[in-house]
Length: 238
Image 1 (tube, helix red, strand yellow):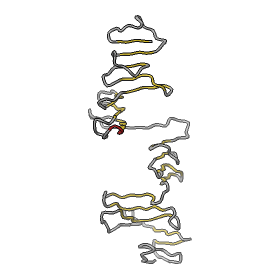
Image 2 (cartoon, one colour; image 1 turned 180 degrees about the horizontal axis):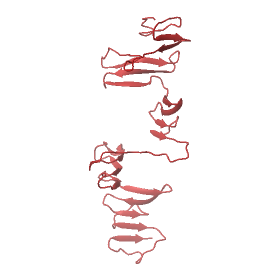
Image 3 (cartoon, helix red, strand yellow; image 1 turned 180 degrees about the vertical axis):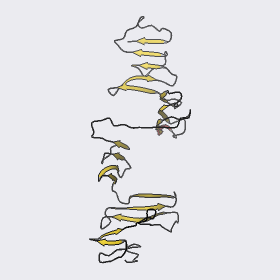
Image 4 (tube, helix red, strand yellow; image 1 turned 120 degrees about the vertical axis):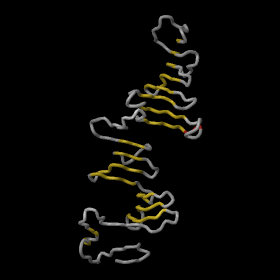
């Protein structure tokens, strides 16, 4: 055991011998703790200093692939991750379960994620994304919110905010809509525009200009009783 600053706080030589619950076999260090509530290994950093402090460093010889577990003083949180440009993986049953790549894309069941969240399954079953709120209060619900911040702040009038949500367990209704002041809700089929609901709650089918009536239908074939006429706010044109 060496207290060598260049080698770290603790360096273990392959020729070292230990007693009690510490053994060294073929270069592997094993520490055994028999007490149920006592940790086998405790590692802390006594330095704050307003910086990130690695507590345990790990990696390949030469540090070409490296990572650390540490404490980030500015955010007062613990972290685990790579310190070189390499992916971080979590495994179960020795199989890759979650992968985080160097651009912060997350893959579940996918080791090369192509989106911010990429979920992949090879099973002959549905891939389910599940949001569950077990609270029985009237304000309880589940919600997916989509924000396009291109037009301004995510909390300002310039942002487009769309959501899919349940109102509450008591009412039992679902909402799919836009929360932006000038946001429109569009539906498509086969990657082609089909229907729009604009900010004035006017509906256009086959047209994005739904301002001449509450329901504007464009295209053919269609079946109406009075073709081409505006009837009670309904505009139907070919």
